[in-house]
Length: 72
Length: 565
View 1 (cartoon, rainbow over the protein chains, first blue to last red):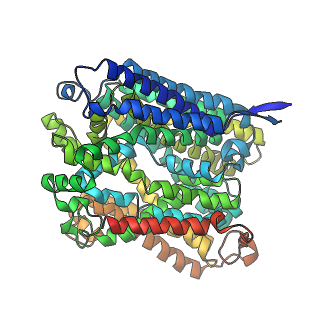
View 2: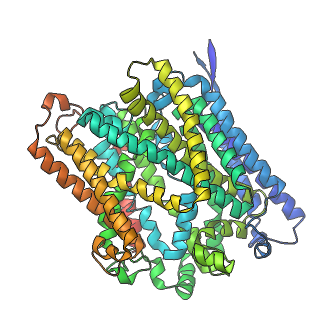
């Protein structure tokens, strides 16, 4: 009987992927609609590029360590 | 957002995006616990994660169990207060000990197939030493967990405005659920996840901070203007107690911190050693602490550097807790959340707060899983019920996880009523570390050490540590005798107290051992240097050998110390 095996690295990939997507989206929203009270270095738009970096790292982990079926 | 700090009751305000990120984190750690619940049915699975962890998983978990939120915030605060000297706790106060564990001690732990550090003492010295170290470890671990829980809830109250009970119950119940379901494997998997989240959430601060400061060279100028040029030198001010902000000298740092305290913590504290014992084979068990050491060297980037950046860039002056309470200002320990609020908008702020929560939960899961193993194997099975089935001990482990968490919650509420308990519990924990290292290392390296020598060395070493602490508490001027200098400051006490406790433990163990009958060599095989056949690594490439990577880490470690001399 086959059993689905999920690697710890896949969980990490999911975490980085989802967090990266949310942060990048929030960064784009702030870029389009800048808030009145801004953080220091707001113009670097850290949310966009940091979110994108996390998203890409997460994607890489998810593709490299996908859930697989193993003999039980 | 920064403008709001002065007028608000707490440091940062979370948006709905931040809340989504935090909720997603809790959902994911619980999902891991539920996913792994079917893989924790035997004692070996539940308490030792099946001994099938790779070197990477064991190594990152080994490091993560130590990367608590209080550690992150506390050492960032210390970096603001004392400068780059705080880095010693990450470099000389960790790296040599981790390499020593990997190359010298791990073969004995691993080959003996012990499930815990007290378990090794039982094999080497018998029941008395195991009982002494198991009871003290279990008792102190669960109390420390409660103290940390309270301290973390307090941080969440100050930083986010969350009620104390909310933080305590949400985080502790989450940890109880995922550890009780999946045992050590679940704790380890979550610690690795938390390791990545800590870096993802905290790394942006030094990147943006250095950009704002105009690079490291310009940050040093800013720090020299606002504090002193000594704040960015690791060793040059340690010639005497009076020439550095910490009030300590190089003897205390090298011998107290580097040779005793860190050796004690990283090689005999079961909280961290348990992660390595779960490795799948001997080579992985040796590589794991080396991988941990490699990453540990770079943790100052997300802990010490933010503190230094705060010192150079924050417009306000941070003070000690007492002054901050009197003036309504911010304390040293607020530097990390302040830097987080300085640079992080919606989403990034949620990730940064998640990093703090993840740090806290990984530390707590480490405490709980170590407590569960020591209680079940070294106290319950050894002293109360020797004839239970494997299933019975697994069941006991699951219940102990829940009960351990509840005792920790109880301790947290106790500390809430009387804050001074916190100081006592933290001090108590430090009493056992240095003598325990003396006992274990003599047990591993000196076959003449006897059961009576080990017990009395451990007992009197611990007693001497308590004696020194009480004498300084009663009469603060006694510190001059403990640290051998009238210029010593409280930070030096821990170092010298540990040094003396270790020396007393070793001397007593040696003297009593020489007066008592040793075990025959045949009974010491697999436990002591010279009587333990170490598996050969011939036939594998140089890049797969632990000694090669230990050498690489050593070169980087020495280089970093020279660069920041």
